[in-house]
Amino acid sequence: MIATAEVLMSDPAMGRDAWFERARGELRARRLAPYLGPGLLSLAPRAPVPASYETLAEFLGTKVSLPRRARGNAWAAAQFIESRQHRSSVTALMAQAFSGDVAPLPLHRFLVDLAPPLIVDSWYDGALRQAFADRAGFVEVQGITRAGIGEARWFRAYDAAGESVPIEAASAAKTLVYKPHGGVRPASNFLISDADYVEVLTEIDIQNPIPECVRERRAGLGFLFLGCHFNDQMLRTYARQIQKRSRGPNYAVFEHAELTRMERRFAAEIGLDIAICPLPEAVERLMTD
Image (cartoon, rainbow, N blue to C red; front, side):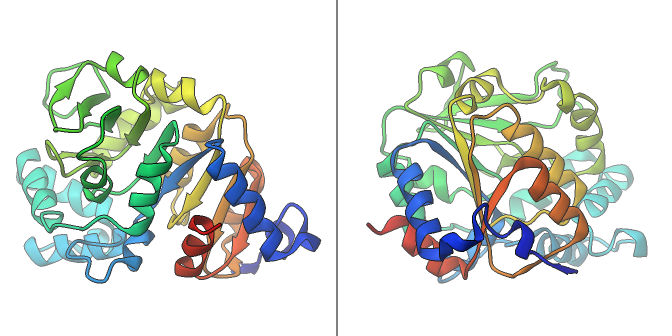
């Protein structure tokens, strides 16, 4: 682990208050796409679903006896279950893991009212969808597994009622929510096993798995990463490719003033302007004038 002073802020002399003023201004001007990670569930009074890949791996381990190499690794655990049982077993366990009703957070309500052009929701719960449930002009695009579906597409689109809609509908949406790893609602789409990601990662460099509507919108936006961790190569690859060719700037809130060597390299590569701050405080400051 290494200290992150050199990548803490683009202008370290600016200070935390000025960082939040600038990030808040960009967000409220709808020039940032919030990129939401599982860490946001720490803000929920009660989160009846896994709040990290580590706790998801623990859940899978309570349902299936896993070999040592798969313990503690959600992707490897899901792959073991898929190879020894069936893909439907993975889907059923993931649906069970995320069956709990996660109430929308104040941040979700804030984003619904703000209506930015694009929100990336990288976890499987349905809290953000629930927050948008009574709003017109909302379309959600979810990544899907291609295992056994006999289709050549990488994603499906849904309206606020959970009905499947043509992907073209996303281009006209006031707010487009992109869930690159899928979501429990409305149809239990999950990318989770190693096999799911092998196909995606072979083509993500040429952007095929990323919807054209996402690529169009990011061109005029920067990103704001909240509740995200980048301690795995797959998570870094997804974030890198989703923000690729975006306008910038890119902001991130991390709760700890240390990053791994690879996280540090990733932050420098995509030009992350980082604030080290407890997540509850950061979210409150971003929502408050």
